Amino acid sequence: MKIRILIVLLCCYITSQAQDTLRYQQKNDLPYRTGNQTAYMKERCKLDIYYPQNARNVPVIVWFHGGGITGGSKSIPKELKQQNMIIIAANYRLHPQAKCPEYIDDAAAAVAWAFNHAREYGGDTARIYVSGHSAGGYLAEMIGLDKSYLKPYKIDADRIAALFPFSGQAITHFTVRKEQNIAELQPTIDRYAPLFHVRADAPPLYLYTGDRELELLGRYEENAYLARMMKLAGHKNTFLYELDGYGHGDMPIGAFHLMLQAIKGKK
Image (cartoon, rainbow, N blue to C red; front, top):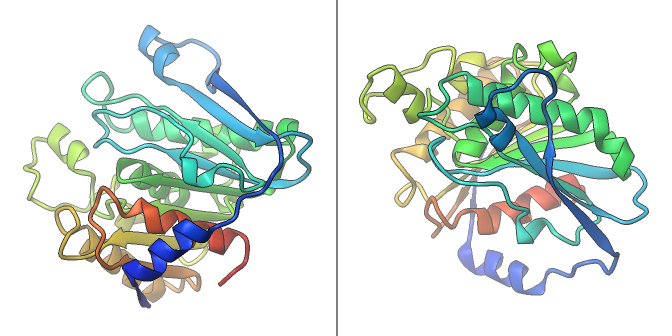
């Protein structure tokens, strides 16, 4: 299914969306790994958690930043604040200090931390959602579709309530291809591609991209192919959204709205 969203409607939503009046707290730089770590792991493998005071069984969103797996840093998106939800923003190791699949494993470790600690902050572990923009969307897809990443942490990836990648790569990420000495415009699909792991029993998958004429390097078409293959594999809950008028960088404006609607059950 292709759903095209008009920029006018999205702007109207952003300006009119009401926020709740609960009190919120935030804790920063919590390590999500234990055991032996390098100095770089200790620096990067940290997360921030934003949560409503006295929360009870509220949804949890784990958010991964973008930056091509070569840059970027964690932050709590302002669009997700004051929504009576817990938001976890996690860093991960970056290329070239880290190589694939180390940063994918970091994403899995952060999600495992959410499953193991969300209740301490009033979170509902049956409603843990995983999202991210660009490289962060790619990481969300990889750990949600390829169950091998969460398995060492004794977490079944199918426990994830839904995946919400924003402009994630469906083919092998261009930074992973760079590590393999493959050119940026040479597409490949290997075990480091979400497309390689299409399956009928995956968590619900909401694919958001910008306008196909404004997106980065065919990102819409990659996601359209992933949506098609998921459906052919028998997956019943794959949804594809193309945000008219938005490019790669600003498409999260509309995608945040759509994700919150889905989580709150407002189809």
